[in-house]
Length: 81
Length: 138
Image 1 (cartoon, rainbow over the protein chains, first blue to last red):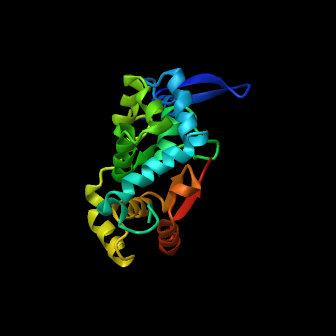
Image 2: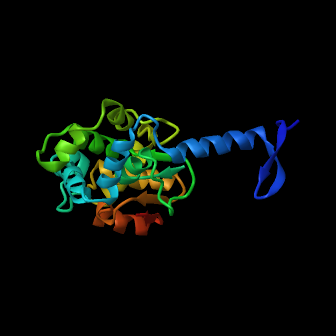
């Protein structure tokens, strides 16, 4: 016996959506929404770190961790080698 | 499940899901979480330290203890032996690269990075030889 389903509007049509599908869709929505603990202002900071003006400094900080730890970085010239 | 790097983990935690990142559960290797945490807690000085220090405690928690529905941390124990084999094959890669490679092999022969500079030459070469597709989404 399958999970119960519900008729919902989607793309201008009414379609059957099972409870399992609804749960998966809800998880997907929460995953893509990000962590609710992060404030709006800090969401901007996260974006600056990963795609904005702080990318180079962030990469330098990560590389410095690898370079300072041969077990982690492997002792190669390239910090990520 | 998709193995991602520090850039994508932070970006997704902030709710900015890259268009080219497939819609799937995300996992960050332990070594990369370690590197991220050291950057978060470090005090190298400069603008980065000031910005990270100014994050709210709740936002820092999102990096320190990620919400499992946003991204998870990979348990490294099942991968240690294979990672050691890869490290030996490539002349001592270090845990960062070996763990990423073995995680990629275990999760769909693919890895996702948020910045080309974060891939590393050895990882790119070994990934190609091992049949791992290394994607960079920006």
